[in-house]
Length: 64
Image 1 (tube, rainbow, N blue to C red):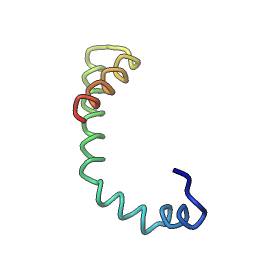
Image 2: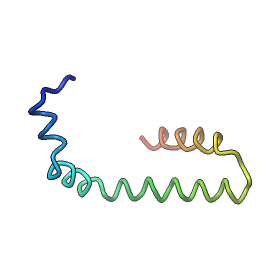
Image 3: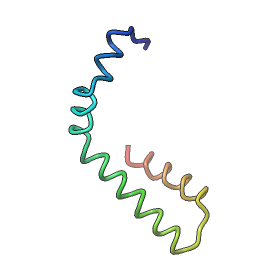
Image 4: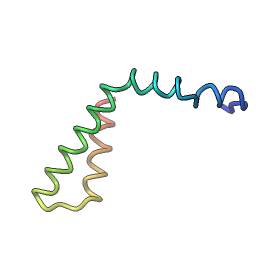
């Protein structure tokens, strides 16, 4: 989908962005918490970050 300048300006306005963030706040917070928890587990287990990213995306795919 290609947006014209007016559509892009409307979607990128501070009001639209703030509404989106407010509407998605719980989802964003949960994803951040999950990422931090998984990162902490990997740090404690001394695992590689590349594996963390791969497993995180697999986990996220399973949730959708």
